[in-house]
Image (cartoon, rainbow, N blue to C red; front, side, top):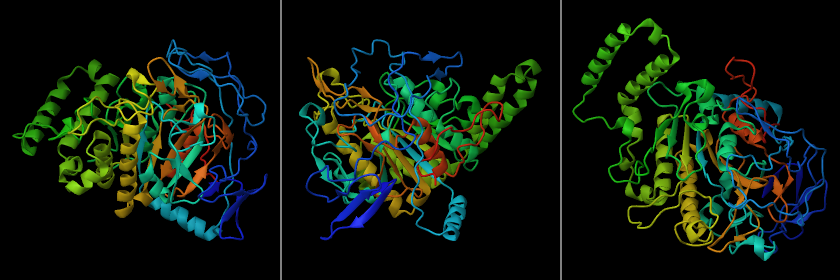
Length: 547
């Protein structure tokens, strides 16, 4: 396993690889044996500070959150640090920002293994290669301890029942419910140091989607920024959002549907307003393309001409209204989509062979990932997929709404029932591994960034309520995954402490995560995109791969 950061790899005497941090002793990285004999745990990175919980948090009239200044650099947190109570009972108002704070941005230098001419040539080639992004939003908050960052030697009331398993990358382990992703670990990078201070769904969702710890009410999502700066061809929607949110954790409209201050042209095409409106449903046909079969292109053109003839008759005081302009833009987009055979064909998941559909899984999440691959092939720049598992046609019980597994409805987080990891995570694992392999087999992975992340993680401490066992909200340290588009596979960025409760090394803030996505897509995070064109950059963060 390669650690991205201040790390040197050495060869041992018996073919075992040994890794040595410049600031600490070597640790064994053998696949088997003590799971803690992996990458060394670093002291805090220079510039890294942990912020105590603050009371002086305020909300501006524009909807931004004002946080207190960063505290001085502190030492690593110990495993004895008390864990705040983020149970549903403690979150009496989900509109509050509880224990809000900030993480200092930490840069990291990566080794330059290539000479300058090679780097410049690679950069030029990368700039010429159109890139797409599939953003898998695991909203609700996946438990990091049961997936990307297992801690088998943590106390019993923290670690959970799942054992770690080896991956294709020596030294890297994941939870036992993820065997398919373990087998393709050479294709992705795991970030184990995602961190912020807001354990509230709605706000944390906006932070992730906007790439900001203090998003404005009109902040555009990263998807809107990408498609504004890298639009797709005219007949293809540049930005598609697959599946609406379920439950009560949906972020504000501006975060993912309106385009924010970038306007309606930067908003996504939403597929899945109703839960049955997904490609796992037999006879699926997206609403934007579900026109009556007897309406030919010639009739559609005639209707558009009629609309154009009516438009000049609208009084000037109404036609000058911004709402009228937005309506006109929407009409143009709608007609372009209806007349685009390329766009319509991309949504034709039924054209895929049965064995391909079976590999992804016949549930909504698997079929939406397959649809995302088809959209990327057709030229869509960015596809957001809500990781709602849903039901396959032969399933007969209520499905997982989100990954927000407190022990909801009396179902344990570790159960194989409808709201448990035992049912949901293996399906997500198989579908995501299939997506990575499918993109790679088709030569698309090098030009497609795949992101898998949620708004926060889950508490290390397992909550044992009267009805069921669960884990509560935990934003202080959690995990994410990046793959494709030049992301170095078989790597881990950052590190958590012994209980996955606190970041030990190389914290990644929402700003840094957003900047990483933008930079990987070939966009300078410093690009000015605010309403006046120059006040605010697209991101104030630093890419974790910034050299």
